[in-house]
Length: 253
Image 1: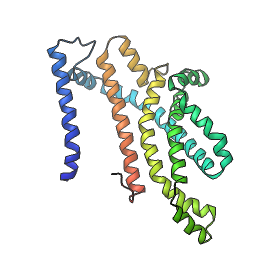
Image 2: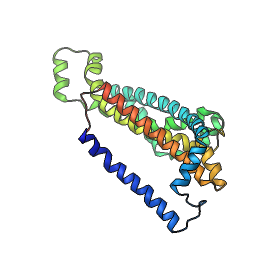
Image 3: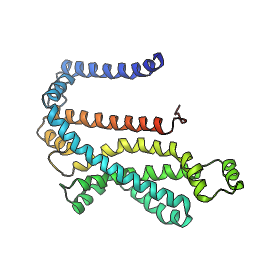
Image 4: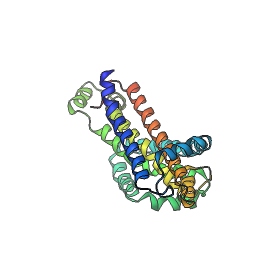
């Protein structure tokens, strides 16, 4: 318990200090609320619109989860193919690198046009594009960077490629995959919200943030940003809990 408190207290103290400093600066410098609302003003609006914000947040969360599932599944499948067959590696890797090199701001309008601005699937595909590369590249590393001695031992015992894959390569890849899952968990919410900046359902976080900012109601925009942060952190913590449950033998230091 003391060790856990020592990890929690420093970031909590910094967080509270930043809020206090923010409040003091806004009040002391007389900054207008439409430029930068004080934390107390944001908290007040957040409480008054909590139900609405939760509904909006849930709409975007579904888009993020859908894109996370599509992108991670595709990344894992491509990783297995590229790790197993050299021709697949040569054929698919350049496309994966190219997709990762294109800014999401360029993809968003195109995918919105393909699937429809109001169609949640367009935002899911934006998220899928973002999370695909980190998922694929980490899984490939985990599948290929196995200990040579362990590989030689299994082959010396006449293990099949199927046995080597599921008894050696996949267990070795799991820590890499969960590292990618945690990165993808954060990126998925970012991708969903950014995709909504280019249009979408009115019940979406990105659309809500841009509309409220255009009306200079930045306290509501900040409230929506808080919802996005809470969802992203919760998603990350769920992945972390799943990692500790599935691979308890692996601990990050």
